[in-house]
Length: 68
Image (cartoon, rainbow, N blue to C red; front, top):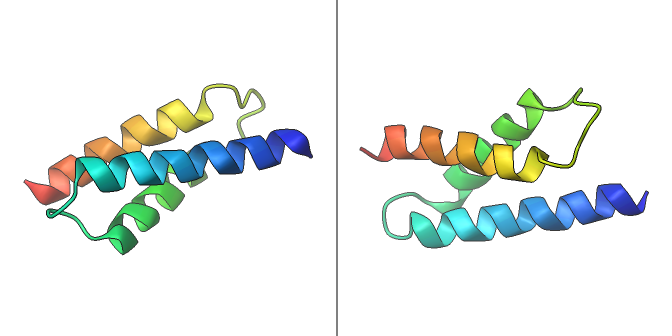
């Protein structure tokens, strides 16, 4: 259970980092939607250690493509 809470906190940090990175170009609801979409890609991953890092990379790529 603690692992899920820790991952939730890490994902929240990912959202905050992306909000700072794309400030003025992408609204927060779009960032949250991309993070959720990226999380879904790893929904059945058994090893969760790197999920937040991978989610950040995947979401950032999608946001960059949409913001361009």
